[in-house]
Each structure stands twice: as structure tokens, then as C-alpha cells.
Image (cartoon, rainbow over all chains, first blue to last red; front, side):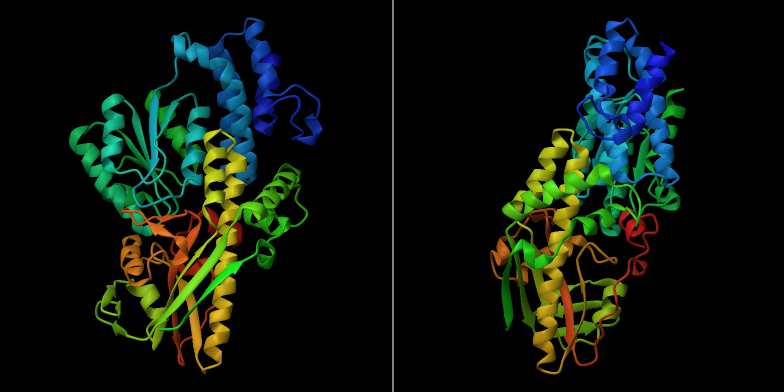
Amino acid sequence: MKDFLQKLALCVENGKINKSSPYPPNMRDQDGADELAKRALEEGVKPDEILENALIPAMAKVGNKFSRKEIYVPQMLMAAKAMSSAMVHLKPFFQSGETKRKGKFIIGTVSGDLHDIGKNLVAMMIEGGGWEVIDLGVDVGAEKFLKALDENPNAIIGLSALLTTTMENMKNIVTVIKEKYSSSKILVGGAPVTTEYCKKIGADFYSPDPQGAVNYLKQLAS
Amino acid sequence: MTGSTYQFDFKDLNISSSMIESVLGYKEGEDRELVTNLIEEILTDTHKVSIIKAEYRVYTDVRFDNETKSITINNVKFQIKKIVFGQIKKSDSVALFLCTAGAEIGQRSREAMRDRDLLKGYIYDVIGSEIVEAAADLMQADLERNMLKIGKKITNRYSPGYCGWDVAEQHNLFELLPENFCNVKLTSSALMDPVKSVSGIIGIGKNVNFNPYTCRMCNMKDCVYRRVRD
């Protein structure tokens, strides 16, 4: 079983989606994350084990490689796609409650900003870290974040901005959220954001890369 | 008021697969098999669906206020902030411009993202940005030629949302431009529709200069775009 999960983790790490996907060339014609996850379940591997011992460690490796600038955004996105193809088979177990996620994470690019690549990268890495992600999209104002929090009161919030000017909208959103949910945890990220800015606006955590956010959430869940 | 309108063909922009690979971060000699075919496929599709337009208008009624780092154009005031003000303050007139790659490419990027094909969505997004920037380069080059004919030079182009210039000032910019300029509309939160559009200002005058644009002007050290272009 260990060997099985290692193979699945390798597929995710390398972005091998399924048997027919040509990438990466050295894994051509081999089973991908899709087939391996399906077979693992058929052979009795528990969904929790697939998540904890294959998907989460594989995505952590991908995140660390990206942090060290060893891979580019495309490789990271392929890994995410491979992870998603495995997750499809786990979904029924999440829905039935047989497999529990670590928690809920609400993410959005703040109002006035349409940039979503960074937000999507963080969302998929956090999903790969075992969390349920509620993606509110781009140009999201305080009210929409509050509504999502009303529906998911214990969720952790992630705010993204690419522009120095739209970054200012983070402040208002953080203030509005903290007024109603003072104990809620808010992560901020994006090119112009810094640790100092995070502190200044009363947010709880800043990371310059997606893996930092995953590690912070891991701490919160433990 | 003078101005020009352009409709570019995709091939006018000279966007190649290798150019996109480089924007994605790939360096000379690195394996890029993952993206090459997908980029080619998306470039072929983009060629068919992009409606690439650009327009500029020149305004001569301009006043600069050094104290507030603002510019007033036809009685509409823009708080352009220190960096942009410093670059265009010697202008005797300015061009306001809009460029767009059309609605379809942004739509395809969003659809791919929604279908969880993040790489495809990302590449559509990157190509859309490259199209609109390449179109703006062509428009700007033509503006430069036109101004040289009357003994004037131009500055770099600057957009609301960058270099500290508040994105909300898009509303002022659109107030000055003719209705349906370039077929681009503005949402209440100052975002352009189509998404793959760029707007802004270019200074014109005898004493202005064009600086080779680098990301180093900006203070966003961790920006993903800086990382791949530097």
C-alpha cells in the first residue's frame, strides 16, 4: 500500500494527470493520479490515507519547490490538476462525512482588483493541504466576505491583491470582518503586501508564497 | 483635439510561442514541453477570436500642481501621485488612451479556470495581457511618430492602479474619453470590461523623456511578473 501511495504522490508532484496525458514525457503511458486514486480506493485504501499520505505531502513538495524557485507556475498548475483528478474520487467521502477536511478556507481577490492567478495558486495549494476552499472570485468586497463567513462561521479568510492601490481595500475588509468576527483569522497576500502592512491593517498572517499560507493553516489546525 | 483609432490584426503584434514561454518564466535551454503545445494551440485560437483595438486622444488643456502631485485635464483633476507626476510633469499636452484584446480571450481564460484547467486559463490570461500590451506598444510607437513630426517627444505610458495612482481614477479618465471609446466600459468598481484592456496617460512635450521601462520603478519586490521579467 505504501508503494501505491508513493506512486500516486509522484504523479501529483510531477503533474501526471491520467494515463492519456502526455506530460511528463518520462511517465508517458503510465497510470496517472486519476487511475491510481481510483484503484487505491477499489483496493481498500482509506480515503484519509490517500489524502494524508499521498496528496498532501505531494502538494507540500510542489509548494516548497515553488518557494525555492525550482519550478514555475505552469508546473505548479499541472500538479494541481493532477491532484484535482485524484480528489474527484475522494469527493463522495467528503460529502458523506466519512473523510474530514482540516477546515474551511474562504478566499477572494479584493474589490477593485481582477488579478486571480496568485489567488488561484494559493487556493489550490490550500486545497492540496486538505482544506475545503470556498473561492469567492475577484473584485470581492467586505459584504461578500461577511456573507460567506456568516454561512461558514469558523472558516479562515484569505485576501489577495496585486495592486498597491487595491491593497488598500484589504484594510476596510479586515476591519469589517474583525468587527463582526473578532476571533476570525485573516491571511493576506499578493505582490505589494508585506508583513508590516499585514500587522498595520490588523490581519493575522502574511506569506510571500502559497506554501507559507499552507504551513500557517496547518499550525492553526493542529 | 487630435487622436487616432487602430484595429490591429493578431499577426501585427508578432507574439510568438517563445515570447510567451519566456513570460511564463522559462529560460534558454530549459525543458518546456509541458507548455509549448498548449501555447501554440491557444495562440491559434486567440488569432481567430481577438478583436484588438486601440485609441488615443490628445488633450492640450493640462495643468500640473506640484504641491498635490496632480494633473488637471479639461477641468478633470487626477491625483497621479509622485512617481507618475515626476515622469510627466514637463508635458505640455497629454494623450489618454485605451487598448483592448476584446472580450473573448478573457472569457476563455475564466471558463478554463472554472473547469479547473488552471494551466490553460493561466496561459489564456498571459496571452491576453501580452496582446493588449503589444497593441499599446504599437499605438504608442505611432503616437511617438506623430509627435516627432511636430518636434515633440513622449513619455512612457502610465495606468491607474500602478505606481501609486489610484485605480478609482479610471472614472475620471473615462469621463474625459468619448463614450464607447474602443468599445470598453467601466464597472462601478473601476474595472474595465473587457478585462483584457489597458488605459492610461502618456505625456507629450519638447522636454519630456521616455525611460526604458523596468519593473524596478515599482516597489513590489515579490511581484510574480517582476520575477519572470527581471
